[in-house]
Length: 253
Length: 253
Image (cartoon, rainbow over all chains, first blue to last red; front, side, top):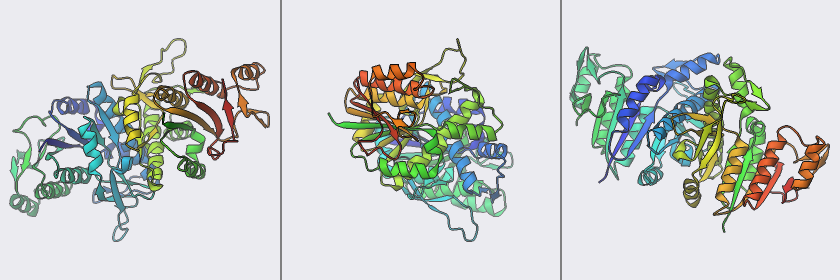
């Protein structure tokens, strides 16, 4: 099978122009077809603040009322997404910015308001892998914003790590998929020490003693889920080290 | 040749949900392949205002400094574009929201700052009609935001009427193109009377006596230019009357 890389960069990288340029320099060096997924929470919070909209977070997840949905649709689908696309074009990569609504790529279900009402937040139901395949075959590099739709005319705020993992899993049926979560730190850390290899046993142990916590937990859950579902290789690494095979944390089964 | 409709809706229609729904109801009734181009100046001005950014206009055109470019990239490329796409998907139309940066669809040149410095405003240089053709053949309905790129990594604010006319002209080589500018009034008016047919002579006469003025002038210039360059049919009509062949102003050579 042909190889495919599905790479996610977070909001902190997208926010800082210098980091973004460094990342893109490495990104374009990677051979073969690629899909880029980006976050943008940091910039969304900033824009919401300027607009006088308070960003309410529960367990690190954004509560998305109608006003906030407009902000994330603007910031993720417009500002960040198109900046990346314009930069990739200038670097000779024929990219296409997409949300889940575009070509019905990712359909989600609005999350049940019980027990916590997150508002216009979507849980992924379906990935249109056929359309992604067609784009890849046409040498187009999809750039996915963390937005999906419900099929009833509404956009939904959707976690970028989840989109990355679901897309990687879905496409692992037709490609040898490597999934990379990019961070602004070296990888999964135990204090100042990088964990170079991580399996489920080690993950559970380190989670149990609170060395792995907060946002790293759902990221690793999605990583192991991807591995289990047929994704060939999963790693978590610093955004400027994606081409260094000795860098970061590699997940193994 | 196969027929193709290139339809433009302005910011005032995009801004009002009820108008937008009325328009889309008519839009989906139209048979055959279509391209939708939207504006969004009204909402951009509103969002800029909330962000404390002053909207400076010269001769009805927005002066686009870096902050304003961010606003229009958010509002046109994100908010308005994705709302339309999500709605079209819910109506069974497989749409794809695009800016000129996506798949290098429209390349522009930053406008010469002399005599008036409009900032990050682009004049169209090239339309990638091949990519648009592929999308149309795959039954995808492109939804174009009024943004292009310069090929050097920058987005450019670009007039939606110009994009509509240039796309229509470019595609008239391979399709029988009908171009429709949608307004929130009946068409080109002389006082309270609708002008149902307009040729260059009548246009020049009415412009000379100041009956046709302001924003209608560049619109008609682009309309006549399109007709001259091979676009089959050009009309200017109310957004809810696009399927009524007796409505609006038809341009003739």
